[in-house]
Each structure stands twice: as C-alpha cells, then as structure tokens.
Image (cartoon, rainbow, N blue to C red):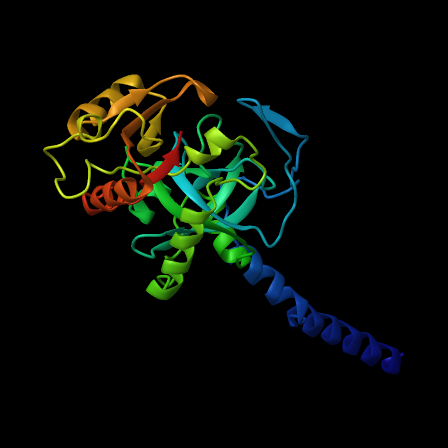
Length: 293
C-alpha cells in the first residue's frame, strides 16, 4: 500500500510539472498571432485575368505576363491608396513605375482596368502620383515593369500605404527608355490603331525653329506641311483650349476616343518639326511628339 501511495504521489508531481512545461510550438504560435497585422481585409486572391474587351474600337486581351515591361504615358485617376489601372495585366498585380525624366521609381498595385479613354499606358492614384512626382494636368512618360515584391511590401500596398521608394533609375538607362518611347508610338503593345497610338505621346513644340514664343506654327509654316507636334490629347475641351491658347497651337477634335488634341503646325518638313519639338521640350513638354498627317 505504501508503494502504491508513493507511485500515486509521483504521478501527481509529474502531472503538475508537465502543466508548467511550454512545448516548442506554443510560443511561436502565440508570438505570431501577436505580431500579425490586422490588415485592411483586401486580398490578392483570387487573381483575375478577364476576357478580351473593347475600348474606343480597340480590342485588349488581358494576360498573365510575368515579364511585362513597357513605356508610355501615365495619368492620374480618382482612386485610393497606391492603386493603378492597366488594360491587360492581371488584377491584382504589382508594378514598378519609373518617371522617365527624373528616374524616380515607386511600387504600385494594379487593381483596376484602364485607362478607359485616350492613349495612356497606365493610370495611378493621387497618392501614387504624389510619390512619383506627377503633375495633375500633364501626362508623364513612364516605364511600367511587372514585379513580384516581398509579401511585406504587398501588405503595405493592400493597406493603402506607400512602400519605400526604389533606387532611382540611372540616367544611362533613362536615355534608352526615352528613346524606346520615342521610336515606338503605341504605348500599349496590344493597341493597333495608328492615329490613337501615335497620339499617345504628348509633345509640345512651341513654334517653329528659332523663335519659341512669338511665331505660332500656323503662321510659320505652309498649309502643305505634313508634320505636326502634339502637345497633348485631352478629354476636357476647356483644358485643351487653355493649353492651345497659351502655346499658340490648334485644338483638333474628333477621331479615336473623341479627344481634343493640342497640336502645333503643320510644319513644312520634318526638320522644321524636329526643331519645334526641341523647342517644346525645352519649355517642359517632355513627352511632346511629332506626328505625320
């Protein structure tokens, strides 16, 4: 009986000690639960590709392209957080957007389809535009490159906050990207329309060659000229008219998208148009482009 009692006491003591022991998995689970952020409830799942659709007569085919890398124009649209709109990338997906003038690069979460008019490559939210340094009224030349950032950065963007700014793109690469934008008129690779694709790059040559402000292209060139310099394409007629009045340009309406295009010219030949383009870029129209009628 005494032996049995001793065994009983031993079992009780062992059970008490076992209750005090914390096994390896418990602290980890408790710690993880404590530090896990609550988040905004926004999820990256499921990822949506979507069916082909048409904007202004052009068919766009959404696709999952992990190596997507293109240049074009960025505009601002009414959205919250660090959101972006793209015509073909999966929803959601993450891209690095680089401003081709200053090399600044930011991380954006593509959550919408767009632009739904015009020839822009991407639209970004006001917060993203602020981090990138975009003007609210001038489309800006950018590079859009799809990336797969760490989950921590994805969570930051899902919560509507800015991720840390990327290292600025070196000038040597910016020159290559700007040349690519100048050579390839269509900003979106799936966009076949010639006039619409050409209108994509906003170019603003002030006047003819040597005299920037005094001579407007309308007076400086003959009516037979085939070259024009486009300052921008706007959905707002008033904005287009204000810019045209300021720069001595002409507003051309109609055509693809029903946009109002602000153009200088026509110029008598390509050399005169190139001089006007140089003049325009010197005045800050960094995306100004020559078009041939």
